[in-house]
Amino acid sequence: MNGIFASHPLEPGLAARLRTMPKVEIHVHLEGAADAATVWEMAHRNGLVLPARTLAE
Image (cartoon, rainbow, N blue to C red):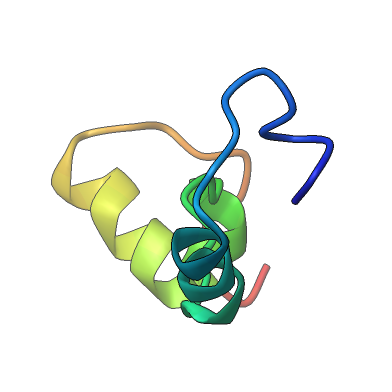
């Protein structure tokens, strides 16, 4: 973390807390976050035409 906060030094205690905090991914694309059946149902519910006639296809 030293390089990240080089222009804004942190107290050692705060830097240690930030290093130990759980991290999350905040940028996830829909196609990686939903299974095919969910995407299929959402598309049909919203009237979207898909390139396949059935989910299995």
